[in-house]
Image (cartoon, rainbow, N blue to C red; front, side, top):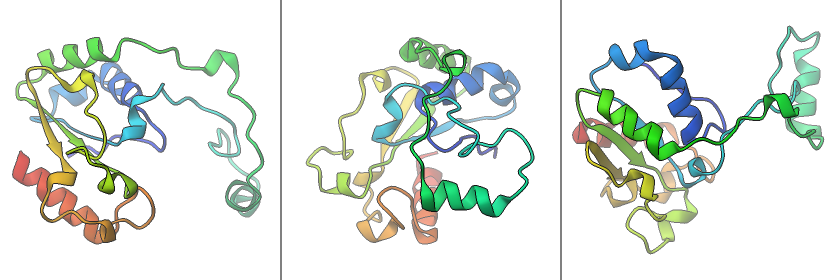
Amino acid sequence: MWLIGAGSWALQNELQYLDDHPAVIDGVDRIVLVANSGDFAGPSCWANANTHPVRHLSSAAWQALTRYLLRPTPPPPPPQLRVPRVDVAARLRALTVRLRKPLLVVLYPSRDELRDGSPCGFAVPPVFRMEKLALLCLKRSRRWRADLYRDSIHPTPAGMRVLAGDIAVAL
């Protein structure tokens, strides 16, 4: 199992990673994408050295203080580092062609989205309506519930076990 991801990554970032590292696709039997409703906006890019250091820090305590407590308004990313948008649907289709088995996409609702009337907690993006793609809406799980979140989006350790168990059943 290879866990691939980074804080704030969007679907485009994940697909770009797989394009950049074809050995990942060639070295696994299945790919599972866990996506929340925030993953369908534009791609993330490096913003600033305070949140994503690019060199050894002289003081980790100062970095933690400014990042988590003082929280200054970050400057916009430099233009040369902005990630241009691409056709995510085309990239996803190309990925499903390369895979030997269907791609599993787990639609993961936020705690607030559990109260939403839609079956998955949010509308299923059109990009996921294609062959060779299986969807698992976590909100439909009989075991998933609001107390499995440690904040508005991240699961508790017990939530991770439920999520992993539901993915295992879907595979």
